[in-house]
Length: 640
Image 1 (cartoon, rainbow, N blue to C red):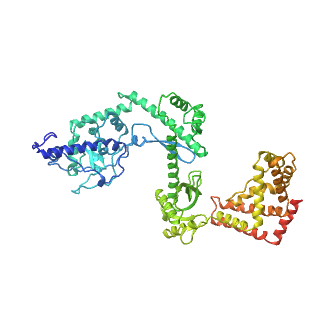
Image 2: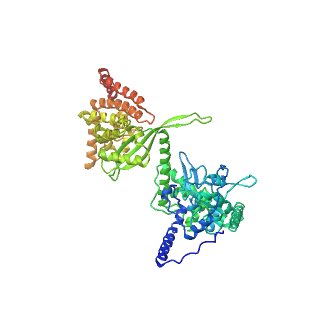
Image 3: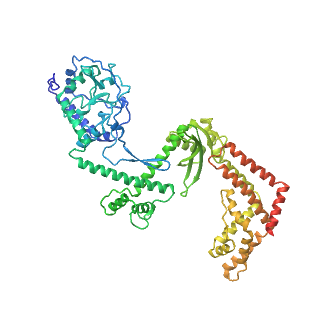
């Protein structure tokens, strides 16, 4: 019995007619989002998330007549590999750089639809989509756990093979299995046939009579015609002999053009980011003064690169309104690069499994408290021919986190949320390091204690460099003579730097090292302010004497300058100041070396103890009579 032979419909009542009209309206509204499914198919294969199949009365009756007296035929299974044409058809463009691989989306009409699931294709297939599907091809779903229906029947991949009467095995290349609908479709009939059957609409899923239904469909004349149209279009696409092959060629040229443009724009953005240079200027237009580093770099590249030159010509002449040079696309590219870099870091961390976390908080210029997070792990590179395996300790910054409150509970919540966002298990943390603030390092209620309550293996190690800096700061702040000594050094810098004339006088007497200001936070860095005085004290003294004796300085400002210069010269000439200069130069030099070692990425706990022991022994020796006598002797030589 043919597919057109169906039972005669009964006349519907008014209520049935209205219900049918409502269902038809709902179906039309569902088809409105079919194109979105074509562009962005669902990733889940769970049948519980699928929409229920709707069988019209005509289709159900037709299927009932088709499936009568059907027998199941046994077929041999054969596994076929994926279609090489689909494997060599990437949907992304690869741009290599120093550390990462940047992927730029293709500027094409192929989209990101799932060509292997016909149930997700749009209801109306136009010519462009038909050509795209034929050119892209599909891969038959094999080695898959096919679900069973309510009759405990399910599809078997052996149906992808047809056995001829002489025993020859012929693959059914037109047969498609839909994972989302758990049904079979005919690829060629769905694309080239106007016939409305289960093979083209909702899919065939009567697994009890699959064999005979397949054999019957293969002998259908409309299937033969659709199969021929499929192969004919496939051949014409391969030989570029379609009616619109010229338009296709133009489109391919435009795709290649925009890929090259985006490749160059990505490279410029990456270059500016690596060099930590600002992007924007006062203007956002090309070939205008003050339009920022990004556009100026593009203009420079256009002087030597034909593709960039052509792109700038099109943009300047208003030939195209799409140029990808505005601030919005710059921010989007920066975000893409950020996500790729972050993904690379997280992937390597997950391979290493265990990691340590370093966190610190500081306010920015807008007075917003921000937490910086650094993850530390061991990166192992496997050996390759001619290249031995490498083991490297890595520390990577993974983001600034906005902090509204600085109590331990709030900080812990921010840390946990960010780790969950990055999909990094907290239970794999094996170390945590913070400064000595009570909210971070507190033994009872600090962040480190709360994390150890969640993961006892996350051992806390305070920042040794920060602890050393605090020891030095507390030791110096408790002594009046030391506070006075550093006050004189800061006063010297302020005195000379507040006037260009006085600074020129300083340069005349001090040709090498110039005066530096004191660091307010990093005490070991104060050696940079002491070093010019330690080795050029006589030159600085002569510069002060020159200003104090300069009779051309008249008036209230001139008199004050001469008085300040005389007072400073008197202070640095005192033997107490000279001995303090020698003492603190030795102390800060030793501590600065130790601090730099502690801050190295490759320094581990065992390596950190050696410089700390050496610094401790140095301070012990300096407090002895011999050490003090050495400072006095060096001070006398400097005073002479």
